[in-house]
Image (cartoon, rainbow, N blue to C red):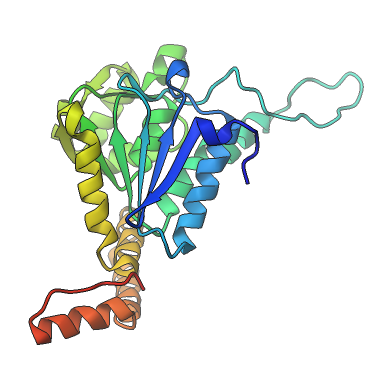
Length: 277
């Protein structure tokens, strides 16, 4: 169910060959996201984890100029509770709650999705849009795309988890450079420092994303999901903890149908036919 009559036009969602394609469709607004679009993405990411028809996700946007410029500050959508006479418009904690329930909840839904999420970066990812990109598992960028940690230009620090994801994808020093200066990062430089997996000509972006996503969708879905969980947790855990979790998840994966198929196909010397369970 959509929250507003136009959210299904602002966010296009289709399933093709077991791949969920999500396209932010607000090019005239820099593909900035409204609260309704944000909540719909969260809903669809959560649903993808249990949807049998979804085995991979592609997140992209309409147009060639912008992937996402963050939240649409003109959209409103925040309902304020009734307040006593003389009370201020906001109190300490209101802003933090807005961040937690907004952009942080969105990027967490991408990172926590049990299916692999590819960002097809068609244009500029700025502000919260950069955080969305960084939360994805894999990023394929058009050669014309850019990423900008634009917050410092407004006297702000990044939100949406950029300060969490960036140092894990590149070096701490490079993350500080990007955040402190807020300079544009080209697609080629983003690939060089490890923030982007692959750069392709803009005309080839959709086809490359489709090739990667459909390849993932034909793979052992549960295996990939558990591997994603381990990889996402690894920077925050000590070796003993990770070895313990790894051992349990490896055993768990061996009980899946796809693991049995992988072993059987090897023994029978035939191509695998993974089902996703």
